[in-house]
Length: 149
Image (tube, rainbow, N blue to C red):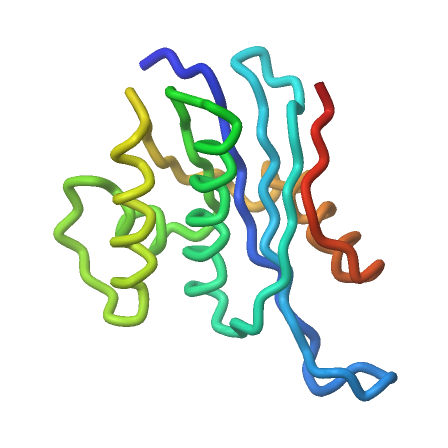
């Protein structure tokens, strides 16, 4: 399938215990948006109170779908390095994860807007950019949207 856009989504794990300033922990959801030539078009990060890794990955995909819609993308391939989430979020999947159902429903509803879409597994070592973005956003306490075009 030819795809106009590729989206990598990642949930950054939060540290154990409160930060040195005593502020509550948070995790970072990050998405890197690439065109069909692999060039980065946009980056988005947001903070979340979710600490469960699978649910965080699921919410990162939901965020990525929402950003892709706002950017006007119509053909999208989502890439995620959590195989369980990828299997659960496939459109025709019968795989059920109780804690992921609400996120799955939200994701599939958003994806119904696209002309074409798919979700694929990407090895963690190949997903380094989105991990680095999430780490940077966590370290600098930064969230938001960066349009690189």
